[in-house]
Length: 282
Ligand code: ARG
Image (cartoon, rainbow, N blue to C red; front, side):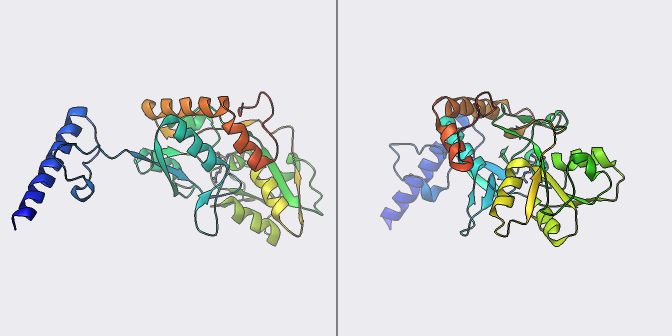
C-alpha cells in the first residue's frame, strides 16, 4: 500500500536526519529507535537525553536502602536527584554491591556513584570526587551490657565491619592486617546482625548508619560508643577518573542545592535538624 511506503520513507528519512544531527553534534549517543522518532520530516527528532547511571549500595539506611516496593530511597538519593535537577541532567539509580562498586565506574557500567562514600587519598588515585556533601565519623556499636568503653578495647576482640569500608580500615589499623578477629561482611546490616547473634563483640561503621540501626531496633539491645581517635570523614559523589565534564556539572549542582536551601531541607528530613554551621553540608 502506498501509504505504508510513504510512512516508511518518512521514518527512514527521519532516522537518517537524526543520525546526521548526531554526527554534526559529535555526540556519542546512539540514534533514538525509529519507533519513537516522530514520523515527520519537517522537525528532526531531538536526540534522546543521556541518562546518567548512578550506582549505590542500597543497604545503608538512612543514606540508601530499598523500600517495600524495591525502590531505592534515602538521603543520598534525594541529594543526588536534587543535584541532577540543578545540573540539568537525568539520573537513574542502580543497586550496586559495595564490593565492586568502584570497579563499576572504571568499567563504564556506572557514570556516577553516591553511596556514603568517604573521600580518601587512596581512593582519589582511582576515581574523582565531588566537593564533600556530608560529614561523618566512625561509631562503635555493642550490646547494651557490653564492658567495651573505647576503641582501644577492641584490640583483641572480635569486630564486624563491612568489607573494604573506612570502618574496616580503622579496625585493621588497630588490630593489624593479619588479625584473625576481624569479620568482614558484604553489607553493614549483616555485620550488625552478627553482633545481635553474638558472633562479634562490636561493629565499627559510619555513625549515621549505626545510629539509625540502633534506634530502629525495637528491643533497644544496643548502645553506641564514639571515640576521639576517629577522624572526621567526608562523603563525596564519585565519577570515573578524568570525567571532568560530569564532575563539573555535579559540583555546580551541589553549590546550587546548598545555596537555595534544598540541601538543608533534605538533611532535616532525614536527620531531624538542619546541618551544623561549617559542616561539609553547608
Ligand atoms: N563511608 C564508608 C566508606 O566510604 C562506608 C560506606 C558504605 N556505603 C554503603 N552504601 N554501603 O568506606
